[in-house]
Amino acid sequence: MDDFAGKESIRIIIADDHEVVRAGLRRLMSLDKSIVVIDEAQNGSEAVELVKIHKPDIAVLDILMPKMDGIEATELIKLEFPDVYVIILTAFEDWVHIESALSAGADGYLTKDISAKDLVASLRNVKLGERVFSKNILNLLNKKFVPYHEIDSSPVLISKREQEILNLVASGYTSPEISDKLFISVRTVQSHRSNIMQKLGVKNTAELVRYVYLSRKSEVGSRKSEVGS
Image (tube, rainbow, N blue to C red; front, side):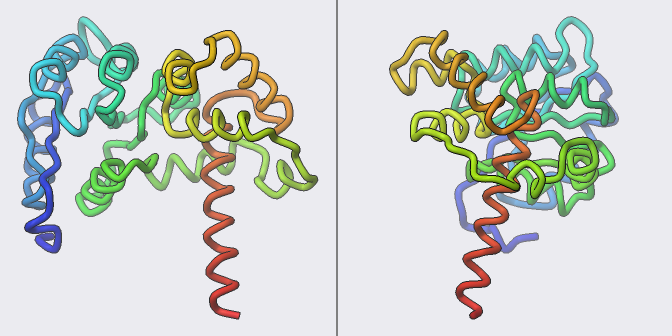
């Protein structure tokens, strides 16, 4: 996995309350010379402090940890350091944890059975600004929510401002962060989010993220078809 050699390194902080898991992650990440684990934490509170100290590119957090869990840690990290990417790496595959992680601003949700190859690819992709999910999480999203063609079966009129907010939500920005970025009030952001969800027929952040993910995937497929025609 040295095809990334010579490129800018990716600085990582790992947080998990099990030493054997942290050691395993270090070993897997060391397979790619561009990935550097600069420090590790045993709980969410330590993770937040290490982010303050090191300003890493990515923080990889477990959910269930003592003192502070990964969801709360994610929220605090994204609030104070929005440029730091946060990936949840957990054994949980239920909707409550997935939705909580995305609502907190997580840039990815991976399960601990992920392969070394997929883990490294996820780290690279999230550094490029992409949302990353384990294949099984994407499969669960597809099974859980209304199929994309049903959501998009009729034209949906979304304003330019609503599209901006939709893209920012899907990129992990919280309402206060969107407020600062677009120079509008938090109340206005929340009103737009409510209108967007009503128009798209979705109920939560996870469904919004899935909508944008599939929309972009569909656009890429259409462009490929046009090129091939």
